[in-house]
Image (cartoon, rainbow, N blue to C red; front, side, top):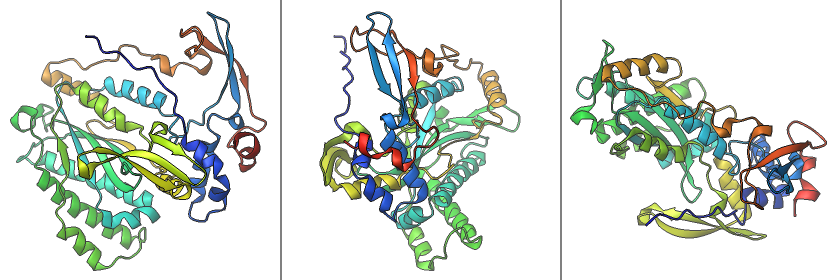
Length: 394
């Protein structure tokens, strides 16, 4: 029996709606940084008349509609689908014909306070320690003895919007040796590194990097008891078995590539003083539950996960880095005797220009809608705080 695809349903509530209704609290609060307020303002203005609009018309039935512009902010739940699809299309052209592993490196909760006050430094150290671990074990002949690669994606949240910094990593099951030959990992790509060993190397490296950052005055001085507590608890990373086809893990990790702390569809009720949303309780085997927070607490938790200014949250390393991936991918293809997967279309439809981008017509149910007129806001550039209130607060 053929599987019936569900029709898309617009969410009842949005994160931008919550921010708009309580913008005075955000603007006057001292617990948000200037960068966080700018990002929250962009989300509040997203798909409202404050950012302007465009008129779209259907060539089939003649229906004309007015659609508000989006903010295209990377922290916005409304604006990530096109970026995600473009990213997946680019990564598809670079896939190696080998299995891939999905690894997760997590910071302990004892460091959450440092992550809150120094996110850019702490998350940078997380990337650096993770790649050091993969690179060191990869070059060790006991485990692999070759140069491997990694794509790492930063997430800072748990399902209930709590602070939970971790990296989702996509690592190929092998690497290139000194002679340029491809070398499989253990058991013909079915096993990468021991999880306990990865945890120990990662923890030691991260603590060393923290001490260096403290010496450079990038982080405040910490008591030795904090470092002692980090070594008392065993650090074990998560390692998922490889998928049968590389495209499968790319589609899987693609869910995380441009993910936001919470999607609009998870919002169940938005009232004047409270917000109710659904989340998965992983302590109870991923059981779906509901959580009610005050609106101020909801906005505070959401703001914790706004990406620091100019911080790169998706990074490529080793043979998958931007500098040498073309040469490395060619060498891997020759070594394995298999062609590298190429994208079906060089210019996917979601990368077309704005006025050429087709839209779905809700009237005749055909993709024949095109932009016919752009309506710009009174002031171009970053929306000012004066653009938010009266007309879009309702």
